[in-house]
Image (cartoon, rainbow, N blue to C red; front, side):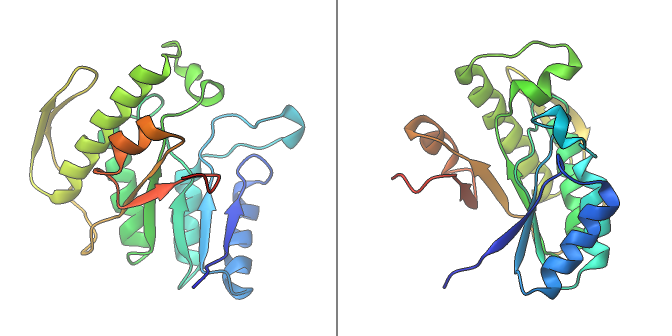
Length: 195
């Protein structure tokens, strides 16, 4: 079975338009809408870059059946993994379980804005591994304490979680990322069908 999804491009539309687009995608028969999570557009001419998370919350309310997914959120720079877990659980609740958290190791375009530099791919993968582990533990419930090389979490708990655990997808692009994230992810995200 083939599902054809719709991409909500934060770089090309205002927040209200993106919500209207999600509703129209559902009306047109799309089963899934993914949304980019960027701080900046790819090109200035695109002219937009609203925060994806409030748009997801509004899209969850404007639709009834459309599956929603971040495509993808970087939980290692602009956002701390615990904050991403809380955002994802909230959208999971607002959507009635129609949300998948798509994660990736980020891009300089979007993550440099917090002024912490841009690490190499090996460090980005290490950070993402820790982030996925933290998010997974928070999704499991209870208090989470975590001390890793890159992140710390002190007695964090998600007080509002959906009945069904939010699935986690991870963007992969080669053998290294597949080996690191296949054991941690429910969904693998790739842009080309290259085994």
